[in-house]
Length: 201
Image 1 (cartoon, rainbow, N blue to C red):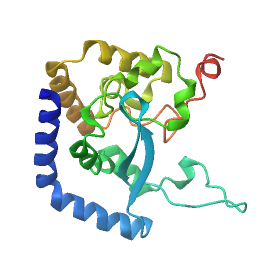
Image 2: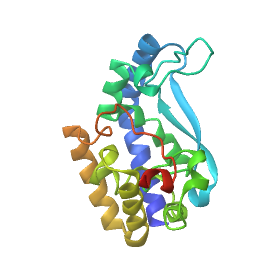
Image 3: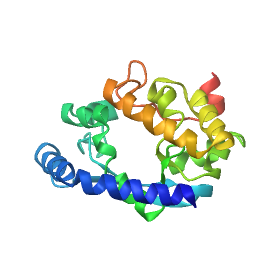
Image 4: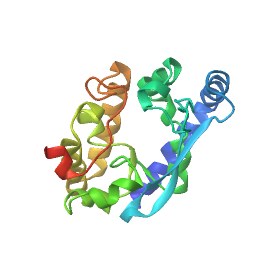
């Protein structure tokens, strides 16, 4: 209850303070990327229950001749990369925090497609609400492997505390300022998780 109350109060305060910034970013997304300002996608939340997560859009909808979306690194614009590096694309998720879909701190909500690919130990990351930031984000973010990321997520589940959440929020602010660990080595975005067998080959 303390964590939920803290999430609600901090998210409310941040949203009030960030209203001018939200408006500016929304206008810029409209100018550079087109009419659809938000990217919304169904993600697994607490105990794997689906919810819709919201972010500012960072990619175009460019497609090939068959109508398939082009790879992420092709669709990611320079402006979109700026939003990701500054973490401004994450701001709309504060509304998800207010609704109780996610917490300020917790394992990042990933794709629904990943649910059957987790090992039983990795699936424990869904024992808590997902978060805007988490222990894996302040210990490598997207520059570490999926296996390392999931180990850090489960470590958080086993050691979570109010003090640890405060520490993660402080370290997140530091990571955002120095723009560290934004993408996987040699890639603009994190590669898809293909399952444990594929990641071990």
